[in-house]
Length: 186
Image (cartoon, rainbow, N blue to C red; front, side, top):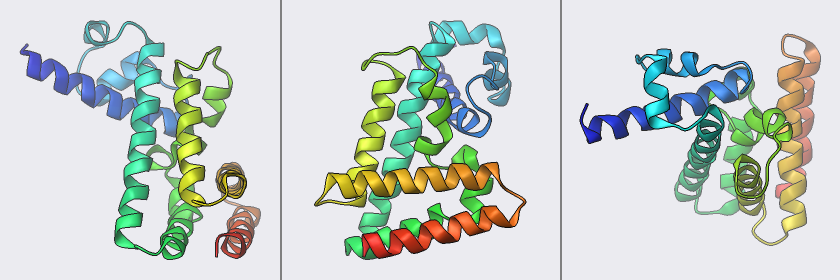
């Protein structure tokens, strides 16, 4: 296998792990699951990563990079910050986002797993904290406390909506969070 192919396989494994971890949780995804999803055998995993924890760290970075790129795209498409934030609310507090955690927000998709890590600021927890901080800063470029409150509302709302999916309460949670945040972020 060429070095270029090895790098491509590694990038594919990280991208797929980022999706699967958000979708099913770190404990719900094995090394074999990740490798099978990209068409490789589990034996090749350890040529790329020292451990599953190393993959979790890289997948966390990747998931937040994806969300950061999405936010940058919103800022580019909507030069007015209020309009960009409204577009985020439309996507974030939607049934589509609720029902597709694998491609959704890293802060929501990885929260439970990161909370269970025994970590320091150099691993997944530090990466997660940086991603949450960047999300909060994007939500309010003038007041970090407002941005943190908005982030907590968004992440909490999507987690609760996912946990109650299939009930009227799920839709009510999304609508209530939207009303609250539209007033706060305007």
